[in-house]
Image (cartoon, rainbow, N blue to C red; front, side, top):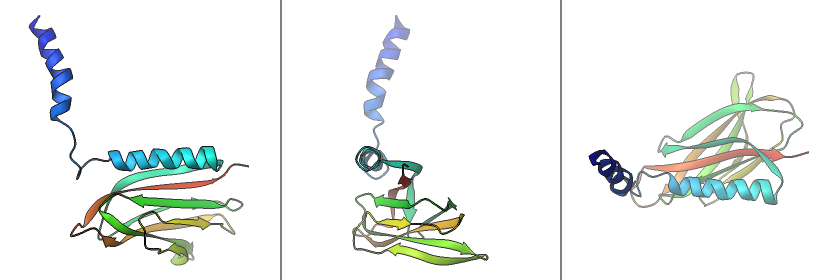
Length: 150
C-alpha cells in the first residue's frame, strides 16, 4: 500500500514541482516548430529535410550540409522571445573557401532564404543574433531546411 501511495505522489506531485521556467524551456520553440511543419508540409507541399533546435549566443550558430543540384531549398529560422533580430547567411564551399550565396538580414526574428544549388555541394548556414531583447546574450532558436515535393 505504501508503494502505491508513494508512486501516486511521484506521478502526480513531482511533475508540478519540476516544471521548466521560461528561461530554460524549449516548449515555445517546439510549438513554433510544429506550426512551421504543418504550414510547410500541408499548405506549401514542402518536404522537410532537416530540423534543428538549440541555444544561440553572441557567437551565433553554424551548420553545414550538402545541398543537391536540381532542388530549391528553403531555410527558415526563428528565435524565442529574447531575440529581436535574427539573421541567416548561407555560404557555399568553393575550393575550400566559404563564399556567401545569400542572406536575410531583415529586422525580424524569423529569417527565410531560398537556395538553388547549380551543383551538388557543401553549404554552411550561419545564424547571427543582430539584436537581443534587453540585456540577454543567449536564447533558443529553431531552424528547418526544406524543399518542394515533385
